[in-house]
Image (cartoon, rainbow, N blue to C red; front, side, top):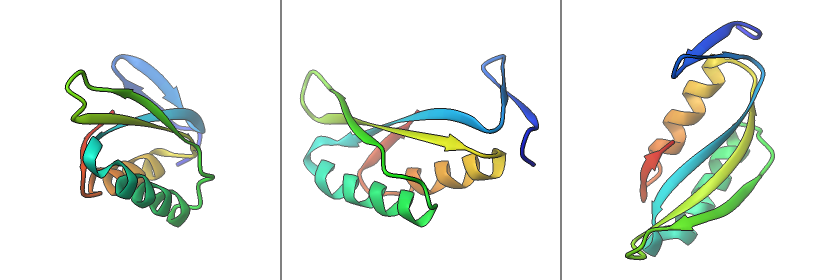
Length: 93
């Protein structure tokens, strides 16, 4: 339900909330992962806001940053699950 408080790491979140996902991806698959992230955001009717972040020292991993406004807990859970299921995504923060 919109407007209900939620705790993450002891901090209270109140929806809607501006959130930035950090998606750790395999660098070799970055292009295809980025395309799938765009498709995921589009399917959730979220404006595209993807930025490149850091890469690992070995160059094996890359970070994509995705800024979104989450309207409620259900939206957060659904989007998080869909992003985590994308092939090539190693971690979702």
